Length: 232
Image (tube, rainbow, N blue to C red; front, side, top):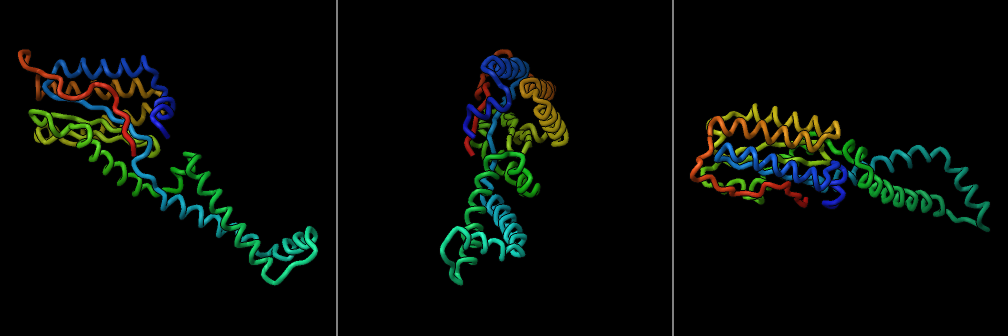
C-alpha cells in the first residue's frame, strides 16, 4: 500500500492533515518538547506467515480432494484420448501449486485475511520494532533536551505506539502513553483518524507542558509538525 492509498484508507484529506499539523504546532507552543506523528501501512512484510497460511489451506484442500480422485481422473479422460499413471499425481501437484500461488496473492490483497493469518505476538513485536526504527528515522532522539515524543500508527496491525525520549521517561511513566495510544487506536477504528490524532497530540502536549513548559525566549521547532508517512 502506497502513501496515497494509506492516507485515503484513513480518510485524511489535505485539509485534515493541515489541521493535524496545526494541532502539533499549537501543542508545542506550550512546551519545550517535540511531538512527531508517523504512519506506516505495515510494520513488516509477513511473507513467511502469508506463505505458511497458503500452504496449510492448499494442503487441506488437497486432502479433501483425495476421495474424489476417481471422478477427477474420469473427468480428465473424458476430455482427453488417454491418460497415464502419472496423470492424477500431476493434476494434484499442479493444482496445489497454483492454489498456493493464488492464496498467497489473495492473502496479501485482502487485509482482514492478512491480519487473521499473522499471529498477534509477531504483529505486536513487528510494530514495536518498527516504532523504534521510526524513532530514529524521524530524529525524535535528537532533540536538544531529549524531550521528543513519537506517535506511531501501523495500519495493517491496527496498533499504535507512543514512545518518549529519555528526558521525558524520567518524569512520566509509560502507562500514560499507553492510554493515549489506546485512545488513538480506538478513534481510528471508528474512522475518526483526524480527531484521534488531534486528541492524542493535545493530551501529549498537556503532559509535556506540565513537566517541560516552553521557554518564551528560546523554544525552537526542532522536528516536523506534519504527519510523516514511512515505508516498511
